[in-house]
Image (cartoon, rainbow over all chains, first blue to last red; front, top):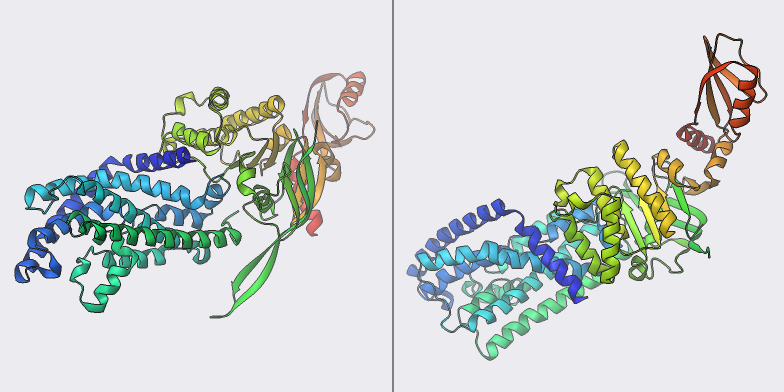
Length: 267
Length: 320
């Protein structure tokens, strides 16, 4: 069972690793955007130092973490949901359904493999470039890194759970593109990709920080920046894990309903 | 011992289809894709399941795999209710959909096979033996390390068939396995399936529009149209049911008047060559012997009736 899903994840990793030129182009884009956003943040933080409780170097670090996790956490889409939606639309989902495996676990494993590749292949280089070009607030103690990594994994799971739900909507809507687009817009805004969530004012900030998308970037970034330690770190994990459980559970319910009423498209 | 592996008993599948009627109004309307189909398949049989587009073939196959739940009736495959125990059944059946792929598009063929190894929990030794056998018989050795997206259709289809057999399924469903293949690839796929059935006794249910597939593989055909079984029996009987004829083309030494033989209809005469039609169910041998006795025979050939035409006549007969 574990070996099966480990192999699925390994396959997910290797599939995305196949397209090397696309990866290189993506790394370049992430790096360029990192620079653009870093200078925008520098301009903003020089006007308003300590905005949202971050100092300048923390703010710039947040930018580069955003570029690092952009693909891994599929903040702007680009996860396995695109393929899943396509398979539902064309009816290829039939093939997935007659396999002796669980649909959700299967695709979760795929997405974890993909995320692992995107973290290494797309995320690492921009972070290194950012660290060379700017004075980043990287952790002083080594154990912050594994703590950060765990938070990223939980973030990927939460992100997957949301995207899986979105993809399943294709069973009813026949074309999930519209919902997927709304979802990535929400992800972009509420993950903190545009601006850190602790900069959001009042109720908007409270709500944004409580939504599942904050697990994708804001929470891992805060862990790396040392904003969450001790019990607060445990709280951060509990927050992410809680959303993961709730959303994966919802995914299972929807999956059961979808496979019961499934009308496989096309012959 | 031969037992019923597939039991389909008075099965129906009704879909609700919504149609646009006016600007916002939608009309609900029921489609009976499968309307009271019954048949059984015994272990070791190769059965052709044929019918025109939209007859309900794929819907039946989907109910047999458990992807779709029947609206009424009873389905059992290897004693299992497919829609209730889809996962348990999945370990005992193999499925090849000619128009869909189980293989991982971006990865080498071998990676998909490794995944199947885990997916079906195939014991290592069994997996190795099965893979070796498939690789040899389907000539996959040069393809194992090639990403699936780079395979030709024929190569991919061989890969798909191997993928469906690595876990030793008792029952194999093939939905259009030769669609889009060239003659050589088709022949290879058919040869492999025939051997599989003979050596392993794998039960095969084959859906196809290619009647040569049926002629070469299936001892029995079930013809379905408008969701109902219209014929179930031996392939030869289909000719009788469709009243088809075989054609004997004879070259005589010189021109003769149309030959007069009982049960034979002379269709055409062209110099020394004559076209003789006779009922498909009848053997050609006594006819040829009789001809050779009475005429100076130079050459002859027998043309098999076009089942396609027979079935088309059958479909037309029903809807008329």
